[in-house]
Length: 524
Image (cartoon, rainbow, N blue to C red; front, side):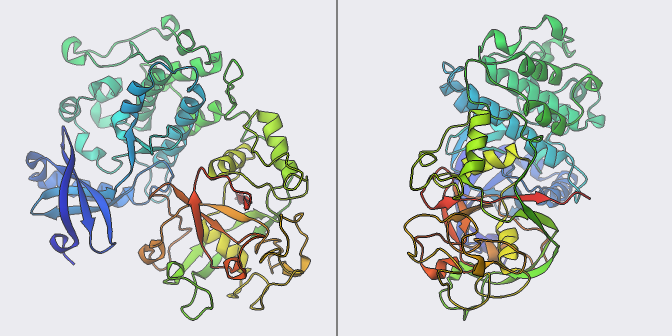
């Protein structure tokens, strides 16, 4: 299918220095997408277009919640542009203007945003398959907030950064304010530390509502990047009482004139932020997440290949469980049981994280029950605290099937009360491990019933159809605000406990049947 047939119903929704953004209907995927068109003077530059195509191939491998991938290069009667997801939200720049007077009561959200941007840049800068990619034009206008939520940022335009690699292009785009000194002095030698400088400017603005003196916003007049003594600069804590000295130090170091004096990687910054505690009782968002000893029992799942999804003839299966695709899974560790009330209570008591409503409920808050009433956001916070992650859909299903291709974790027979707490056997979650007959070949308990388990993936009913056969460790990271849940719960139908059954809910929803378990990478 050529692009003229595939992309129809064009509607311009925005215009910027490099071109326009259009809302377009993709007839192949049967959904709306966004296409960012270059201005004609860029579109006619064949060398530039070829470079853009190479960058788009690289950007497809950027797998992270906070990075919006580029899916395709459009070439047709409308010009040349990049195809990406159509996201419902707002630019960080707009959110900052709206919330200028709320520095203190949004400090927690600002810190979480900062941390997530670091995590996303770390993935982009150090990718194994693509060798790393530098954004070069990181700024609030290129950071989108899903549903306007600052804790759900999406970095846009990875892949189109090649368009702005020259100083002239950057100036045309109006981005000197966030440009690193080396982008002006030696643009051909830019590396990942240029993005870190831009991140420092963004972070300083986040916590002060002011442009730092290190910014190159006046470069057209001065013709020389400012060399500022960081020791004499007003730190963020001068304007935001919630900022501790440690956060001041991190932000100021990012804006060092010499890149050798900055943190050398986004991962270094992320680790430093994990020890930052906001002042005045603000929510602790990261103390020691990478350093907490994990005492929960885990099992090693060897890597392999399996068929993700259900066969058409499987009873109770749904269309969005198909088509089945053979995919590859790397080795990982998974917790034997869902996270318990006792484990989650330790987390909230240690960090000061918000207590979920059901944690102290006598029916749902017993120490050995799986914790419930936690959102996807809550589950991710706990996962980061212990240095783990939520499983991807593919990891979860691979684990549930236990190396087999059965309907349920234990085989094809229907659930009984000895195998699973599902189908109304109980009106509440059972203590973890209460159904030993339901243990699967990997030794995992409660993969069917008891609680729905949050997965890492964004919900997309058409996701399997877009997967390539043989994909390695697939995970759906782009789309709307809903996330995937797996496994069924105490109040679910038996068919919802099948290994291939999929469910979804808003990432913010706290439900009495929603819990989670964790996975951990295998140390090589």
